[in-house]
Amino acid sequence: MTIKNTKADLVLHPIRIRILMALAGEHRTSQQLADDLRDIPQATLYRHIARLAKAGIIEVAEVRQVRGAVEKVFTLYERTTTLTAEDVANFSKDDHMRSFIAFIAALLDDFSRYIQHTESIDVIADGVSFHKFPLYLSDEELASLSAKLNAAFAPYRNNQPGQERLRRIFSIILLPDVSKTGK
Image (cartoon, rainbow, N blue to C red; front, side, top):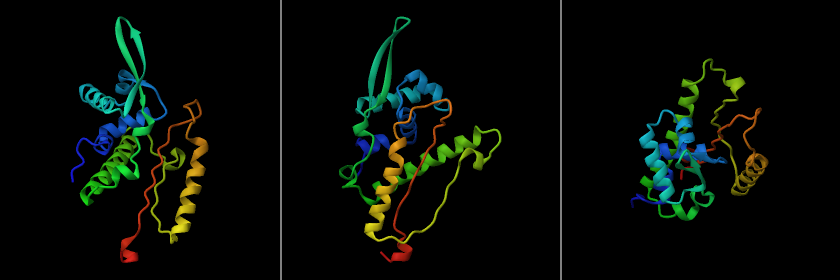
């Protein structure tokens, strides 16, 4: 099964992931997105913005008149940017691998931009961390942990940018260790 032209195909593209992350909790014009994502050629960026808008993944929140031109302000259409169980129900192994690779590529891109655009790397002061460690959990314990993580993040999801607030990227990957379970 191919997932071309599905919501997953649209969302799980490295450039479009960056556009969606830039719009997370924000309203941005195409020019503001171009300023935020300077390493993406403007024509390429605008093509991806148009594709996301046409698919209803982002929407026009406002239209402004600026020096005789129409300027659109984009925002996420919240109900379409997260893949649901229904979206991935018919994924093949290749589809799942492609989705995971897109996720990892976005993480690599985020970390690469951090390394390239930071004068003096200080992961402790910058709050950078990444860890991999096994947990032995029953299905009930896993459900409890997931609920607690969701509850821990909930108070911060609607924070707005501020003088003291830096945008942080949290990524969580959870999968069974099949080398240990034999499954």
